[in-house]
Image (tube, rainbow, N blue to C red; front, side):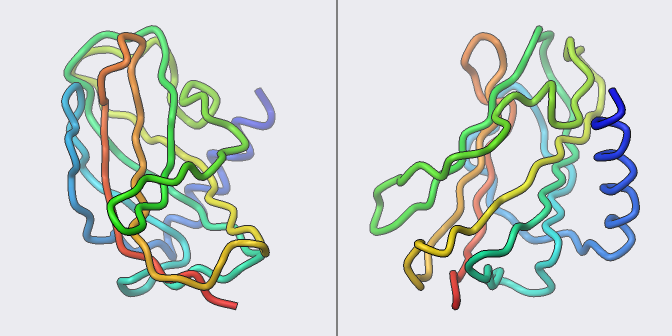
Length: 148
């Protein structure tokens, strides 16, 4: 509980510096994305430095009831989705108070670590959050550039 509280305080504090990013909705079915914030990402494409970690905050409203949620992240390169592992894929441990209720608004909070071994490349990040029926609560894409 303390960890969730600290994560929420960090997110609120960093929200002052966060700028909403323009994103492409890629098939949100059971939810509606209101805002995507990535810190730091002042312009698109987001320049992601190897060895750094980036805060991701997605505010969305749910169109369904769900007991849980699970996130998946991909790097889309040449029309191929390459999975990016998340330390915590469980949305209920990433700022969402579960169960999820129809008509409620939630803030999903997570980190995107950029490993040193990733290649320097331009790609599209695709972030998905699934409900307990394996339908998309949300899906968004943004262009990024991984740099040294």
